[in-house]
Amino acid sequence: MERLDKILSSQGICSRKEARKLAADKKIKVNGVIVRKSDIKIDPDNDIIEVGAKRIQYKKYIYIIMNKPEGVLSASNDKHAATVIDLLPEEYQRPGLFPAGRLDRDTTGLLIITDDGDFAHRMLSPKSHVPKEYEALLDEPVTDEDIRILENGVTLRDGTVYRPARIVEIKDCCVRIEITEGKFHEVKNLFAYVGRTVEKLERIRIGGLKSDKNLGRGECRLLSDFEISTVFSSDND
Ligand code: URA
Image (cartoon, protein in one colour):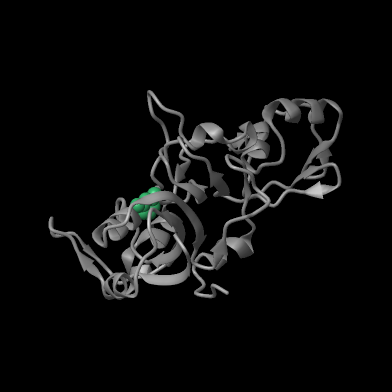
């Protein structure tokens, strides 16, 4: 059993404060009966909730797409710095949220925030081979030899092994690169290996899910079921 206002806010329907007003305005029904209070406890798996004319399809987990801005930590909480969770609007806030896969503090772009551990594990597991594409702005263009090296896989002096990357597109110093692992600083380290410095880094795709150009930096929205499934599809056209 869970509080009605908590359920509505967890589903991205409205904030708890708005839920109280909606209930007072007789806009919420549970099992066909108008409820006047938003703090009542109900069973979200079995009770039928309607807000206005809309029936709420309760989903256990939440999946949020964010356009991560620079300067924010990909972490659930931090004593000193702002995290991506701090940027979420109140209606998406709930315990257990975390970024599925970390981006460096200065890296921008596509980030999925969820409370579904299995989903994140599947997405991040090297066994799943979910490709992640980044757009890197380099200090100098890469050469054909650099591309060959990166596409063959790289072993750093400290023994770190990076699987072969794929260079998707090159426009002067702007290179689109696809990796399937997502190890710490992987893209920066790969380019450093061929003597380049990454000046800007943005993630633009995870599996078949592309970043949403309508989201400004720091903005987010819920993903649809279809979009969630595209994370595991190899279609990247
Ligand atoms: N590779 C990096 O070097 N940094 C990121 O944030 C992501 C991938």
